[in-house]
Length: 307
Image (cartoon, rainbow, N blue to C red; front, side):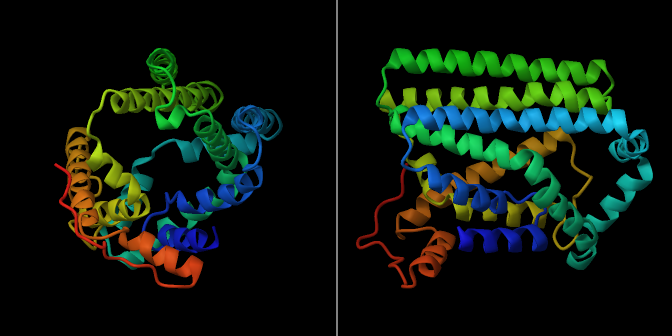
């Protein structure tokens, strides 16, 4: 976890402030202590941790709104996308790497301090514990019945999409009012995301049970850390000033096409790489650092790439 933490700090402050490796490392160090608990305890603690994220957000936001009206007014001003603030951010990210630091450093620091303590820690710890429980119960290894996966998928996608849609509708209905978003709309999305994730788990397990060939997807998963960092390198090169400088110039449809392009590239590249190498490049370096000895990078016999 220490090596992952260092890598995350470098990623956050040098490349992209939205880094999730630092929270993963810190939460993982805590969750490691629960590795011997039963699935029932893991589910209970995971649900409690996840719910704590909601309780803290609602309590702190409501208390601040009632006790500190001046702070609330400043928060509302920060929340409102004023043209001059947007223009400064666009100029920073269309500039060189050094110019980007003026926005990247304080943004990363806020995520890794206040936001982590009040929200991310509880959310990610809860998800990790729930994931550990599902693994122990055989849910993540296609060991359950098709009927159970169909039920989980219907519940996850049905309930999750409903909650997220309600949150989105509420945001537009209230014209994205700050307090209403934080206290209501955001929480619909928070819990809806958990349910949708369960829906995706069920769908993937059903596909595996039906014998679908998911080799390319599995290759991306085996190189998850490499692919995570590669997405940062690709997208910062596309959008930031040290690359193509498209920050603020691409509409939603264009962004969607870029996402599809990155995904397609990583599906092909990951499969091709693992046809010749045993590990992703970042995974290889990290394993070397953790175990203190260099692992073999080349496969004993190169395999054909997945089709």
